[in-house]
Figure 1: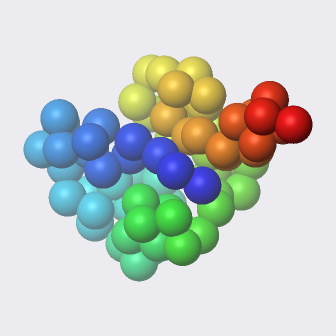
Figure 2: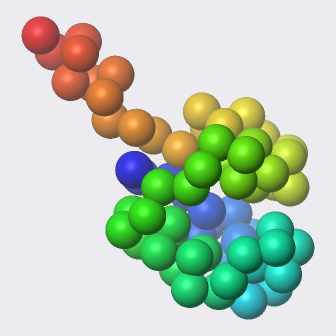
Length: 71
């Protein structure tokens, strides 16, 4: 799943470790989410959205909508 977490984190000058601490997850989890290797759970996605003050849809792009619209 594509996301803009890295950009949002950079705007705030937060390291992956700092973001992970605020969310109660490991730095490795943040890295895996940013690189698209891992999709966060729904509660974690909501926590990320709340932390950045943005709707989930603005942070995460599931690409499924694009595929469905093309059919």
